[in-house]
Amino acid sequence: EAGGSGWVMSREEKIALYKKDKELKESIEKVGKGKDGAGWNEDDDDGARAVGLMRINMYAAKAVSGRQMVEKEIEMLEAVEKMPKEERMRSVGEGLEKANELMVALRQASLGLSSVDVARERVRQNVFKPSHILPTMTVEEFGELEVRRMREEEEQKKKNLNRFAEKSAHESDDDDDDDEERLAKVRAFDDFKDSHRRGSGNSKLRPTG
Image 1 (cartoon, helix red, strand yellow):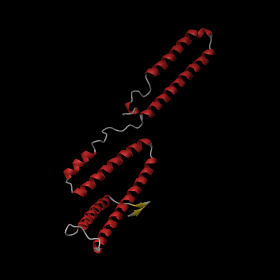
Image 2 (cartoon, helix red, strand yellow; image 1 turned 90 degrees about the vertical axis):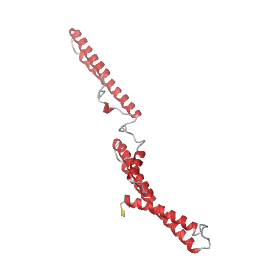
Image 3 (cartoon, one colour; image 1 turned 30 degrees about the vertical axis):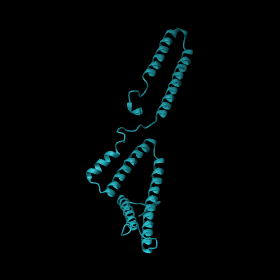
């Protein structure tokens, strides 16, 4: 079925193609062994032609499947590249899950597995699948975020002290006691911010691994 940048194959078509590839391989082996099991003679034109045609069909089927997979992968990579980082990581996880499901379906089709076998195969495929949500940032990115936040707090602290100093310079010397009290309050508030960092109570803002 044509569309977009190339062919689009359904899941059923892929499974049928996989079956056809297996049947062609078996047919080539049978023809190669011959009726008596001694193999066909090189002078046997009919046998050579049959094997040649089967091989051409097999390679053609593989070429169709290979092109479809390459085009689909390019399309997916281009789409993922345009996504925000968090959505991109979630999309990659979903893609791996769909790939596992397709592999199970192909294995079922080729080996004639029962529903119980399929369920067992899915469990096997999910053994190494993480049970937790993947972090939205790396450890390095989290470290850079913390350093930037600390620098911003230091800058804000300096601005507060400078603002207070400028204000105090225009006031009367009689207000020295009040100035010291206000300065103590400013410093106490800055110390409070240092010991109670913004967002420290929200665990969702921190990476899980």
